[in-house]
Amino acid sequence: MNVSEIMAELDATYRKGKADRKVILIPETDPTEIVCELGRTVPPEPDQSTAVAIIDRSKPHYHKHTTEVYIVEKNQLTVYVVRRNGSDEATLSRYRLATGEILVIRPGEVHWAEGKAAWVRVVSAPAWSPDDYHLVDLESILAGHLTE
Image (cartoon, rainbow, N blue to C red; front, top):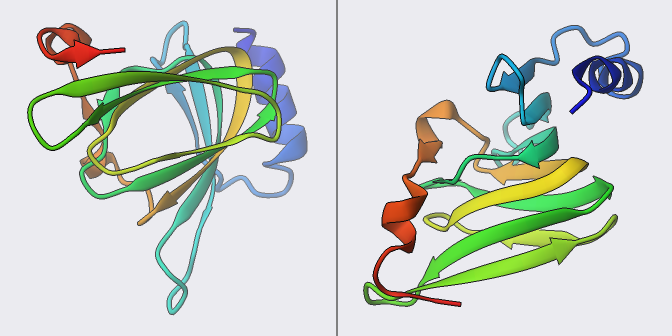
């Protein structure tokens, strides 16, 4: 991931004149994901936030309360989603998304994504919060009752 090129494009496209738009490097050194927060709705509108993420590989995680909508803006993205069907049984689904394609991820669904600097608009409702971002140990999730 070419961080300096991505930062320059973020500045030119999304941050011009809006220095308050926070950019997060994940991890901070040698990032595999860069997130630029674009905004949050203001009451009385429904609570949601929008960001653009540039992804090589995100970490497996889930949200207890947040629904996320991924909209691929540039390049291709593969998203892995672990869905539980009532019992302890889980299914791993792989979605290959091209520019313009959309995927909805519901609360409780463990997910992660891979791409080559794939640009993805992420709409979160309710608005994204670090308190609702839960990393998981992928091996423990995939062990046991998993079908593909």
